[in-house]
Image (tube, rainbow, N blue to C red; front, side, top):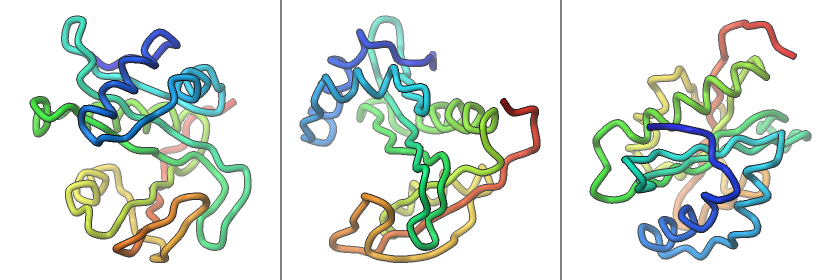
Amino acid sequence: MIRAAGPADAAAVAALEWRVRSTRMPVESLAAAVVDPERLVVVATSGEELVGWAKTHYWDWSDGPAGAGHYLGGVTVDTPWRRRGVAAALTEARMEWIGERADAAWYVVNGRNLASVALHRAWGFEEVARASRFHTVEFTGGVGILFRAALPRRTRS
């Protein structure tokens, strides 16, 4: 099941990030992201188990070719749950949320992450630029790719 994350999910998300990526994420930062109206944090669960999570970011300024707007952030799926559509479902939820707010979605990725590039092509993402950095994301050991997807026109607030 995919649902919006709540503050109580922050510790489970941090634990998943550590288990899968060996990345320490401050629970306080995650809890703040969950309640930020300019962002969406979603989780994937199976019963009571958190099996994946994803987020969005909002940049209110352009950085060269990286426009202002809503960006898809990282997706983390627990290893036993990969290749089961969890990342696609988390991405779908974020794209719908962005579509209610904007005419386009953005995302950046390391050019070597071919699985992510392939996943995002399904939503119409097209390459805009390549660089070592976009906004606050720096790419070491590879080049970053900036993608943009036009979203269908909907009534937006």
